[in-house]
Image (cartoon, rainbow, N blue to C red; front, side):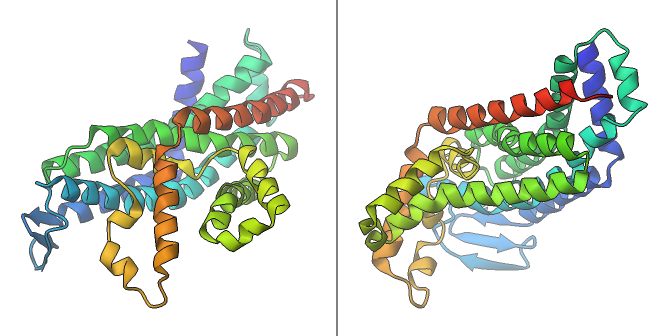
Length: 313
């Protein structure tokens, strides 16, 4: 009951934030934009048929067509809306939860209840994840229905993107909470979390840069150091790959192969290596990706919990 009360309280706080409704509005705009697009055999129509494009690549009746359509949704809409823009807004929306909660008056009421500080910390942390879960379910569920009802493309594995989003956010939210408890500043939490996210992404992509440029691998010590460093932080970059893998979306190269290959200055060998790297990422075990990331999160949460428990209120 105490857990449920804290979660409900956190959800009510989320409803009061404008960012919650901004994200809901963005999800609806994207869904309406998707509805305006239609796939009719070898023809794609836009804005409810105002103009169209003749191509057989996006025929939803073929396996390649379904994979390409789902790929566009995963790599462009899902990655951009929830993977970047959405997550930044969610980080901003939740950064002030712990500083506000730890203020005298608010925390005193909760500490007066028969609940240990450790459980109070974990309950409040889970309440922050509920905000993201609701947004993820709304966006993924809405776009899933549009793909199925409007386009005739049903991809049940795509629904797993919602819990994956919660996992991805939790990798960053633990940093936000730790900074919030240390500084009691929402601004500091936002800035440090976004900075950490950039560092995580750079470390994750470090080995891929060496793979794309074989000449770099001649520097064995640097290459091995980069590989070891990439094992430590949470694998935030795997969100899109795991979503694409379970939705059956293929690689990003599958969406517009001719357009990508025909770009000025495009190197065929480098494009081939990029495609191989992406396929290898798609085949990577989710156990390693999620398990190592949760281990990192657990360490940061233990540090944050220790600060919360030992703080003098």
